[in-house]
Length: 245
Image 1 (cartoon, rainbow, N blue to C red):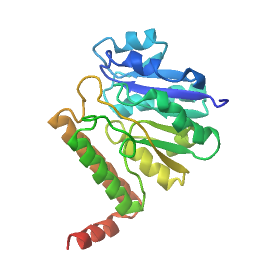
Image 2: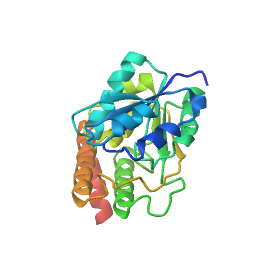
Image 3: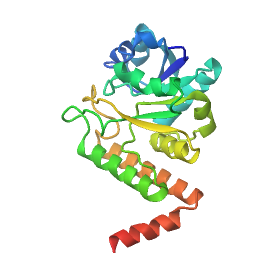
Image 4: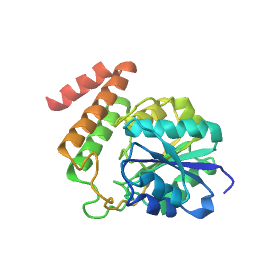
């Protein structure tokens, strides 16, 4: 594949999993793999480097902070395609070519891996994660008519389009911000089914009540902020009121 690919993996305390994540990325893609060590207190950085990844340090805790650090590095490398995935080994890196091919072949600008359309191992997504994803996707459809099924972290995007999105979120609103902005920017968007397994270790978000509440609040805030900015908030509230009546 002739496209230059850069993979960004945000990682906070993923020492047990990060080597397998990096190691399972298909060698045929000839991708540069970047692990953004997000203030880890374990051996995440050392294990990622040992597996062959480029390791960047981001001391500010937050998923968005880590992704933005990766994008800053990508601006230096100037790839054609950027892939994002988690560092906990819940995504299947060996499926990466399915996300990259539609972009490399000129069929899409943004490919989202949907866990809800794909094959999920029992217990891989906790009930609160399933409910939150479905609610957020329902809200995006209600407000903008966007037909996503998931907020999955495994995604690929044409680099020039990623820069045009001007990503800003520093924490839990990152994934939904990208999906909303991709729609508003009229990118060619494809969702494809991807596999999902139980993560290594406990989730920092859905694995705790506090993490779930914080993530849910940030996702809802991001939704309503963009609805307000795009002039869709009042219409959406009227539609919700009509559905509830």
